Length: 454
Image (cartoon, rainbow, N blue to C red; front, side, top):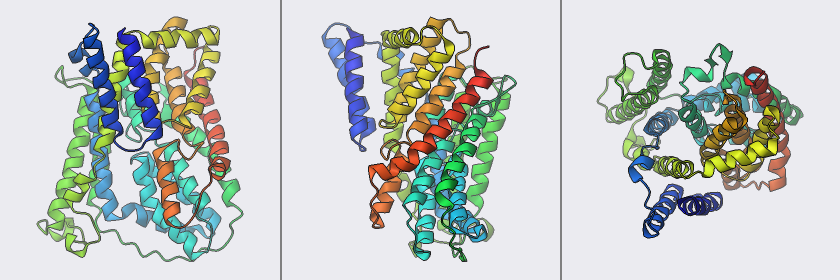
């Protein structure tokens, strides 16, 4: 009975997540609360304490801390300054467009994808305005490049954090694990291949760029804070569990490092704009000038809804796992694959890519990881990580197919509309689909040849 109730509640919440972009975290928790109440009324009250323990606090802390640092980093204009330098040395509009897309990918390895698009969109729109060019392909390229590279590191995108929690991966495991190359290099294979897709689109734009950027970085201190936080994550990965208290797992330690980094960045922002810090540590722009947000505005703009969404999805998927729904789905996929590892891998990658083109990849990845584990158990696979890695690549890159497949896509379309440009579904797909097919093919092939069973 509990399996049916929580399955129905999860499907209702999922439909809302697909169709709405506000109060998504509250919606998931409302569905969870309704399921718990209905189970109690029907005489099968769930063990709430056990389900709440399934929420990965470390992942929520990593997301929150990195998001705070990124918000402060935006105010310093350092990413926009780097983008303008690239445009200045590129020579032509085509090369400048490709370099901006590559920069978008590089930034989104460490900064949330939407924040990356918000950082680079003004530069892209200004570039198009000065050269009287159409900014639509460029903004789409920036969005899909950010979605691609956000998969490459533990801190790049929430699905990567969810995978790390499920598979007990550290920051360094995304690069090297068990003597083999990690997900980072699979994503780079896809990135190199898909860069040729973007170049085929941009190479026709041979107008010369003569741009002397005007953006000035107000402070490099947040960049230093960000770099130190990433180094802290790397050191935490090397240390593992050695010498740590039993309750302080590597994942929780990584979360603490990120939260401390975020709080340090926020405190610096507050003290800097109040003129308390020495001049060499202070931002050159003050709150009174009105060109930056103050700390309270940054806190008010914090993405609490996504934090609640992640926690709620952890809770709901834990309930589905507890009541046997995940095992049933795993057995179904194993039957469809005919017991072959390669066929199961291709089914999972293809299904993840297609479904994520239209639904949010955060709840999808969270729900699918236990299913992947169940598939591996049914097939007798001792190491199922190739299935998990392939599913992550398909789910995260599949969002690039359509304009509603990822939040970064929606933001880029919204910014274009504000600038007076209309983007049709077909126009987006004409760029996103070939980009995705090439990236997924090369990335998934890398995972199979490096991590697949032999």
